[in-house]
Length: 551
Image (cartoon, rainbow, N blue to C red; front, side, top):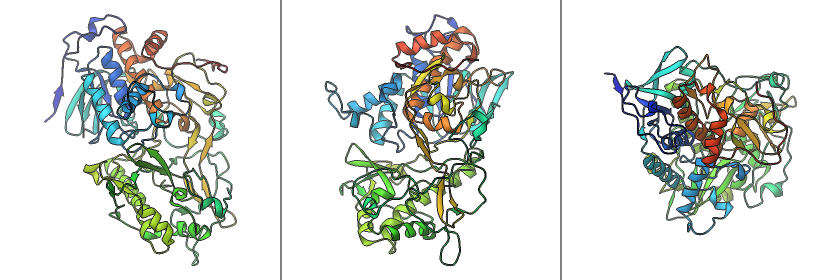
């Protein structure tokens, strides 16, 4: 049976943009703002709108809120820290206060790091204080529209949620797509937006010495460090290597950068759970890694995976960037537009791959004894993700759909053309794409393709137009995660602190549109910027480069 959710709007807030009875009238319109996706961006949007006096609900398709920030990505990717403000910085300040005396200044080294359960608790506290309704395990089923506006969305259990404004804060952009908003998946070609990093991008060999690979400590070790054969002795391609013909440099395609799990680990024996053997274990997946280890017999665990320190005697694993690490190259392509069954299969395949890698390094006899011992000195954390076998619940969906909105952020916008007249946030992270695939070179060796990590030169502004669709496509939807950007620019924008900044802006913009009885495309951007500045959002730094022209 279908259920219609209808409530009265909360009383107008003293900090509201302008007084308008439309937010407080007893209308059968449901919620002022419906946020689909309990990610950090969605939570920030909901809190921002609630603080402006709006009635808000967060609908989360999974069992968990907090997205990657509470799901394993515990070392926040900030780039230029001075660009992070508003609700985003408030979250990190509150999480950090759980470790530090509030009267003291936290060290920058720790301020942006928190254990997953601390992040989850902090998000929940902020949601509760704002009196925001939350429902979980409610994946989207359908969207109802009238003209160019969303009227309601219905979840898989048949419940319908009506709203005046909507925010799609999912990593996949499912609401945006169901609402008929134009989007893209994959990589643009180099000529489409004039981006030097766009499209097909095979990497050159990046030689590493035996001494470097055997050195202790942690560091990202990007690329292919030596000549590795693409085929085994019998002439069979190693798992994870493709011998398809190479297109021209800069050619666009529908491939998606690699996903992974950001696993939380420890060496504290009192809190250590041994790495599990996966449900589906395929040791042949790691045959190419054996070839790498043979060439670097003293290789250390923190060269194969990147280990980042977090509080609580714990660390976080990320892919090291090496030709073989925790990123599942080629495993994500069908995920963005996949149905529920397809995504579930890909999710489990990633679990099997990453768990399999850790199990392989600790147990396969082809791995040197010292490396096996080093690997097994680590394990999962007993006090994290206890209801999920101590394994992170969130697959790191680095990129999925990207809206084609009123302004498409490009490589140039993160480098030289870094100011925007309608700025609603700033960014300072590098242009960063994880690799897509392993290819066979003309000489028969393996190389990596699709990775880049290039400085953004200086902090850059993000246009309000990039989180709004074209008006004829949808007039009451904001998209702060799958925002309008090329693949190259998205590599700089896709960081959790920035997502929260974008979500903060989306929440205030939604309320502004309600109060003005306007489309999100037609609100007073100067007034929006004033409200954001009052809420300590960072919109500009000096000096700045030339602004790109608004349409």
